[in-house]
Length: 84
Image (cartoon, rainbow, N blue to C red; front, side):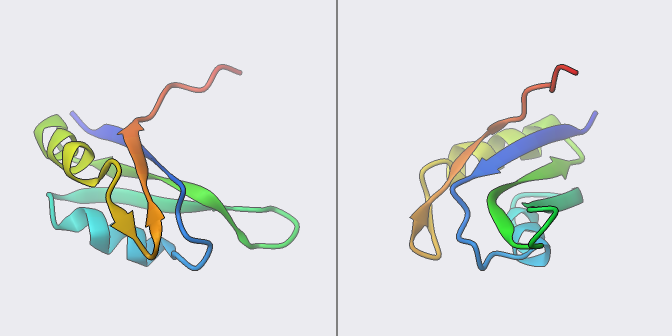
């Protein structure tokens, strides 16, 4: 079962492919996305990564939460379901 991960405090220069490469070190990334502002197209400083197994996701979360990437300390945890 895949696990969706929230990644916060990203540098505004971080691209979706950068995010995918970062998490690929810990397992199979099925989807990655840096969230962008609809009007400007600029990064909003957070994104989501979906990994194919919960074990790989937990390894990535425990390793990357608080890690410094591009001068910013990442906030990484399991994404919460969004209520509509």
